[in-house]
Amino acid sequence: MSHQAHHQLARDFFAAVAAGDLPDALLTADMTADMTGWITTGGTMDKARYQYLIRLLAAMCDGPLRFTIHALTAEDDRVVAEVESEGRLIDGAAYRQTYVFVLRIRDGRIAAVAEHYNALVAQEKLVPLMAAAARKLERDA
Image (cartoon, rainbow, N blue to C red; front, top):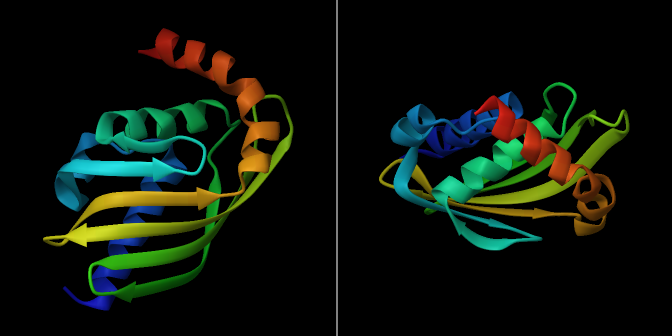
């Protein structure tokens, strides 16, 4: 698989996260069935838990997050993305986060996502909103 194809997988991933969901359709086309996630404040998780956290993040936002990809580097079975997000939270506060994502590729699909970010920003801005966002997801389900 070419570096350009790896870059496109990463762009598709960020478009889905910005939309607030990693639907099974994306997972079928671009992600493996046994995909795993890892986040700075939560460690390793299975696909379903990672999908839930993407929806939870969207529920904490008043509108979609905007992702700016500053750099994509593809080599062997991975893509490393330097990314920044910006948006507004449901409490009206501005939210801006910096990340380094490492996407592992297997058979042309994303098999693992490691999401490194500023834990202090997440704790200060997101943790206070998690319970309300989880209730919103339950109501909408």
